[in-house]
Length: 193
Image 1 (cartoon, rainbow, N blue to C red):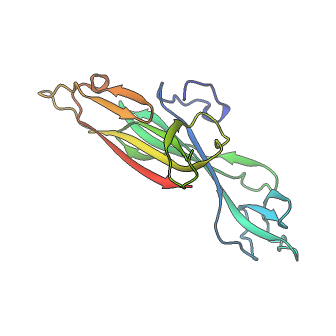
Image 2 (cartoon, helix red, strand yellow):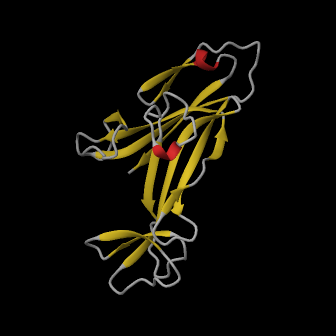
């Protein structure tokens, strides 16, 4: 949850009670010509390291380079409207060793909350039987999918509407009375892992 203090959010106020999701991945196709000032994972198949490419770092024989991407997603109020924000990990300008987390960029206004739950297959058939909250950076054994639930709300209030609905987001509930005169809707998708 966003209530935990984190150095990467210095000076920002994350909406209380919401999740912060960090997604780290490498591009699916390797390159033999890394672009300058990007992050890469270099591996020989048994070990690897993260590095910032420069114009003088061609891929050595026996190694492969994959561009490394890390994004942090969170909810923050923007002039009274909750919004989905993203930060990106990138090389510090002019450095070949230091990385920085970018300033937050607003992606979607009107996002009240989101949650990720992990689908675990307990029978060995490749289908999730149970979903658990994503409270750890390590996937539980048997994880086969991730479910993303997003609670969106209107960005303008309607004085004649009183939201008394209950919304199910992951393993928690959110009361519509939290955003009174705004309409809300949950969107969900399941992603195989």
